[in-house]
Image 1 (cartoon, rainbow, N blue to C red):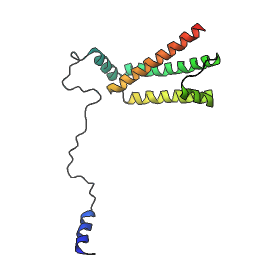
Image 2: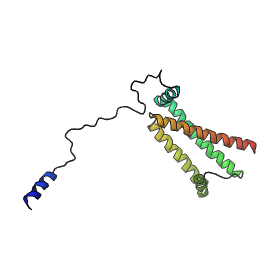
Image 3: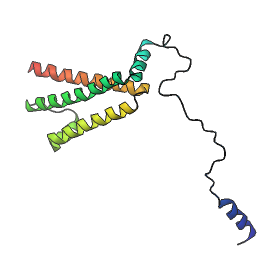
Image 4: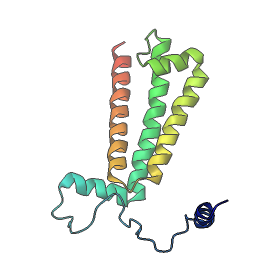
Length: 152
């Protein structure tokens, strides 16, 4: 080995990943940027969303609503299918083709996973907004099922 290769090998022999000085400062803010914004100046919707994110009990109500509405949607779907309706959701139609139990386990399992992830990330504004959106869509779907059953 010549002298040039020996010097290069010496420089590469140590662990270069060891940091001597770290310039990384961890983020201390959560999903809501609270710097300089007083809740009295914040729009009402944002204040409401923040109050949900700050209260585990309030977010728990949303999570429970998602689970209950999802279960109601599943039961009302089974009832509608027994009366001759057709499943319009292609994913659920495929799962129902595999069997009612498979469809129920997947639907409830996915809802449970969504609620669990939402619970762990509830301090973030977007997660609260998406959770409220999911609960609203499920409420509309369940209302649609109930109106359909009442008309037939």
